[in-house]
Image 1 (spheres, one colour):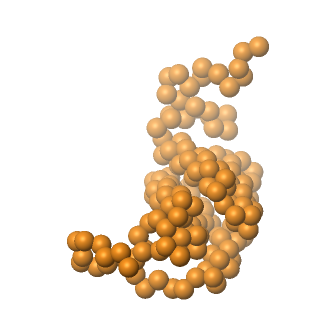
Image 2: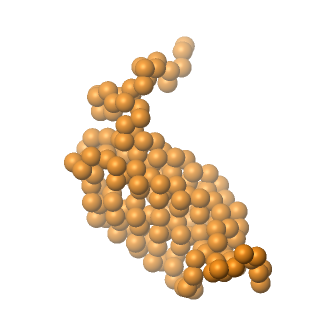
Length: 177
């Protein structure tokens, strides 16, 4: 039996989305690919995450697939519950932090570093979202993507706080304290 994933239908630069052929370099496919990249990276992070974070991360993975399904033309409803959920998670995790009155240098721990990288990927995918046709975009997804990177900033700080280093404005040599 041959592998059913090898369809050969994309060999000329197009792929199928909801029974339509679309160029693989289209804004839509780039955004969907970005969602897949975020989802895959979160899958890696789950392996390093403590149990109290795994449910949040896996919920986000599921939400990202829902958003991809919606953007692709599926019958999934994306509403204010999505960005409200992210806000609530951010607020809950933030309770364990002190406010940083300066930029934070990414790092602090392996988990924190991965969360920072995921935050950057989310920001890049948010930019891809804004390249989509206006009739394809959804305000709830715009808010969700913006809030999601905020959540990952909170999570990265939470899991690197004991070794968190702040930006030393104007300095060339970093003074490790």
